[in-house]
Each structure stands twice: as C-alpha cells, then as structure tokens.
Image 1 (spheres, one colour):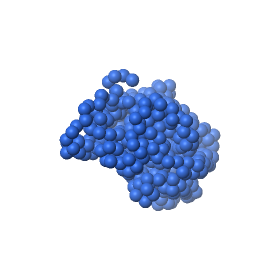
Image 2: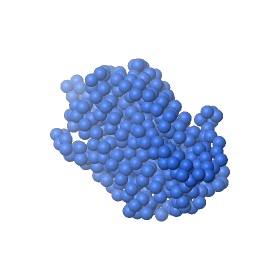
Image 3: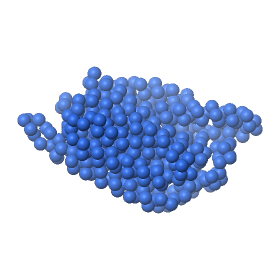
Image 4: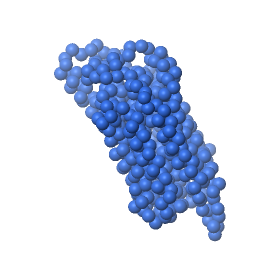
Length: 443
C-alpha cells in the first residue's frame, strides 16, 4: 500500500482521563456523521445510470443489453475491489483512503457525462466501481475502531442507513436534474458536488484511536462482552476468517440478497415507466419510499438487535427477510394505476432490505470474527454481494430484453421472468441466513 494511505504509528498513551474522554467524544461524533453523510454521497456517484436509463434508451445512445453490461462492469470490478480494498482498509488511514476515493469517483462521473461511446462508458464505469469499493469497508473498519461491541450494532445500523440517503438523493435529486437538463446532468451534477464532499471528508474523518494516544475502544468503554481485544497478527487472524464456514454462508446469503436489492435499484424505475406507465418524476416519487423506509429499517435494526435481542442478529434477520420478500412480490402483482399500493410495496421492500444490508452484508460476519480483520471480513462479504449484484444486472438485462415485443412500431417490455428470478433469490437468501442462527460473537 502506498505509504500515504497507511495508518499512522501509535502515539504514547495519554494519562489524562478527562482529555481521553474529550478527544474520544469529539472524534466519535465527527467520524460517525462524516461516515453517514460521506457514504451517502458515494451512492450519488454510483446510481446515476439507474435514473438515466430510459432517457438514454429513448435517445438511442445505448440499448438495454448494453446498459446491463455497463452496470455489470461496475459491479464486477466493485466486487473485486471490495475484497482487495477491504484488506487494505485494515491497515489504512481511513480519512485519506475514503475521501480521496470519493473524489476520483466524482471525476469519473463527470467524464461519463461527457461521452457517448459504449466502450468508453464500460471502461469509465468499471473504473468507477473500483473507487466506489473504497466506501463501505473503510466505514466499517472505522466503526469497529471507534465503537465497542455493545454499541456497535446501533451505530452500524445508523451508518448503514447512509446508503438510503444516497439513494434518496439519486432517485429524487438526480431524477430532477435528468428530467430538467437531460441525462448527462445526472452524472455531471453529482460529480461536481462529490468533489467538494470528498474535500470535506478529508478534514472530518480520522485514523485509529491509538494514533491519537487513545486506548483501544474496548478498554475505553470497559466493554469486554465479546472478549478482550485479540493481540495476534492480522495475517494470522485473516486465515481464521477464511476458514470460518459461517462467513462463506453469509457471503452466499448476502449475494442473493444483493441480487434483489440491485434489481430494484437498477431496474425498478424502468419497470414503473414501462409496465405501470409512470413518467420519470412519478416513478422517482414512488422509488422515494424505498430509501426513506430503508433508512428507517436500517437505523431501527441495530437498536432492535442490541436492545431487544441482546445483540443477537438472527431473529431480526428473519423478520427483515420476510418483509423484503413480501415487498417485492407486492410490487410485481399490483396492477397499473395503484400508486399508493406501489408506494406501500416499495416502502415494505425498502424497510426489509435496509435491515438485511445491516445484518447479512456485514454486521453478523463482523460480530463473529476478530475485529482486527473487520475490513477483510466486510470486503469478503462485499465481494460475494457484488458478484451477485453484477450477475443480476446482465441476467436481468437479458431476461427483460428477450421479453421485448413490438407493438405499433414501439418496443414493449415484460418483466415477469425477471421478477421470478428476483423473488427466488430473495427466498433462497433467507433460507441460507437461517443456517448461521447460532454463530457466536468475538472481539
């Protein structure tokens, strides 16, 4: 890793307890607010294509299959980057690593909005996937560095709602830019804004507590509910992670959950326009229920598991899985002309997937493995997740494109086969999650 991005050296431990408390309080607030808002803005530089699909299609710039390939390109690179950058995150200065990644992603979005060539779209969106992959794992590493086991679920759940902020900004704000100024504005606008956000993050995020002369967070909070901090080498602990069968099962479960999550993220606006005859702004309004309820679901998930189930994640995971599956089924079966039912379906789905992103996409795996490997664990689960998301994108594009029929010279798309694929993935994800019911936490 380039020395600039490496975590700093540990400073001598401070002796003044009041000073330790003051610094911890200040840094913890600055870091969690920065992680929530910063990671939310990462999404505005990832989801622009989801909003701009129909205008791009109508302009004849790309076909549905080509957009599926472009979307898959980002997600496959993202999957590899999640694992690689997750490993780097365990030894990185999170402030530098995450903020600079957002700036690079923002620049790529600006370039994306200035081209019309398919091959250039593929290359740029693949590069974007790499820098986008430096958002999640560093965030989780920072949370594990600054928050102890008994509070980690609540904080993780609140942070996990950050993606809903980004999705909301995209589905509403970016949709407005696209409808008013054309599809290119959906990439230029977020790109310009996120350059400034990245510069702010460079000032407000932080490195490990020990680099400021602070004690380990478990010692600071006197929270040894997951055991004493483990002193073994990170390399040895990583081997333990890779040998843990629960981690691999969680990866598969998360991959299937991400199939349906990104199916809705990437294709639902087009589905609402094509099958339910909404205009872009109306479709984006319906989609707005998804991130709003997703934020509530994510934020409530950590509190629910920490306070009502003594930091156990199994029962809440099952509940959220049932809610997510119910939402996607309802979205499919509701006939056109029922906006409020579509809103209810999208809200149900958003609430369910919000909680599952907390549990399946990171928290359960982070709980049951040593915290010194949080970046590796999050990266491994993320790699599985985004391989699922990427595969979904080209499979869904193929299923939708091959359902096309011409009516009076216009293409009409049928989403039935795609929804069968998405619903099946949601159910199978839930069944796999049940197999790690009794996994135990570690510090």
